[in-house]
Image: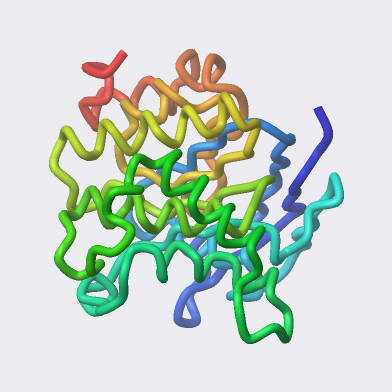
Length: 240
């Protein structure tokens, strides 16, 4: 597999404080990287750095395998205001095609077809005319994932995508993401507090701390001291 993204000796800061430093890792095409760690370890800050929404304090982040910045699909943590957004499902999913539009003030037939395909993939086609603000949390996350898929055929970045969801909706979201990774070959980078889901679905684990604590395959993480300790304290072993 070819490398799609790499970080070399990256230091990240938040509000003037260094949250993690000397971070080096790479992500191959088609892999599934789960980023774990305690609160304040820089997980969401790293996602923003990978998206070029926040510059690292030092170090280098590069894209490979022909991946362009605008080809990365992003599913951020939702705010209360965003959950109350008064637009139709179809409008929100289609907005994922905006980077494809350039200066065109309208969506092409191909973009509309892509939106339909992704709504069908996420099983929300029947909701296309529904108002987003009246959907359940699980339905809203499916809409946002369909939107992210309209922006990419290569890489998805997801920041705590199951926050606030009930267990059934969270499980369904994890299964959908895993299916997209497995069947479509789209690289997944996900921040998660659910270590059980991480060790079930991911191919690789990045465990962040003030100093990076681990990067490698899921199998090696499960054998490592930091992995065993984190799984035990987080109760993640019940998912295995």
